[in-house]
Image (cartoon, rainbow, N blue to C red; front, side, top):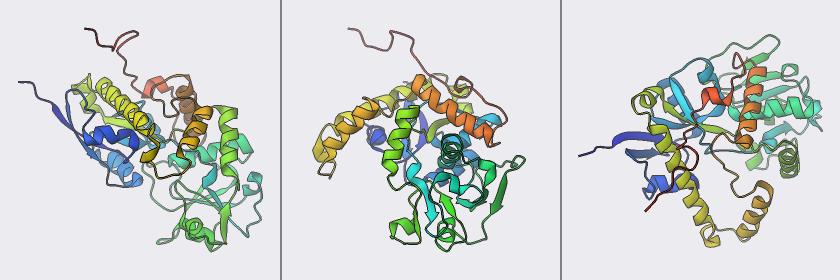
Length: 328
């Protein structure tokens, strides 16, 4: 009697993995336990530092650093989380910042320097808006997932113990904050804090039209020993993630499942911008450009030692051209 291998998958509780979590889509040869009850930063830390999960949604920036340092992980090009980031640049309303270049010379807070959201924001500010990352002082609140030494000319300070960068911003101790999430002062309507880009959605749409990039935040990592022991596993995982995403798309065709009045209008508008699959997996041209840009930003920031190619650090499971269908 054949026996499946038991695996844990740690990831966000997304619509795209609902079918995997509920069991209507399975991974061939695997008994999968899906763990979704943790925040992203804890999941990343537990995977990078302790290898606690067999498969995990992982910060792309941390994975690039882990791959550069030959840590025992592989990744498949399944990108469960993407997000535009222009709306996550927060400024002190009294700091005199009106445009991106006003950030030069300022003190900018971050949770961690290497977080993927911050990687994208630093790179975009430098390459799209002319704000070199060495021309500001960075203030980091938390320990980095992967330890690194700042390169020459890069100034990173530690926030005082017990201080949160978002409230340091509100109190005027920082001029700006780049953050992965909506910060509490914004959610509370604190007048001391505002966004750099008032119409950030328009800025993000223009960025996508200009670059073709819908920023990849997270990759899907697998412990190296599992890939070595079960060479079929990456392909079977990739196929299951794809099936689960397709099930999510089919479910989204029903406008009643989302309690929003204009949901269908918004969905149609998004497809006009991105095409039929904004959350595309694999190493096609669009994702390759996305990843190569992030790798460039990581290398420029001194987080990785060289510009690796996506093919070096991602498995790209495939059954071969024309294969994969069922015949009767």
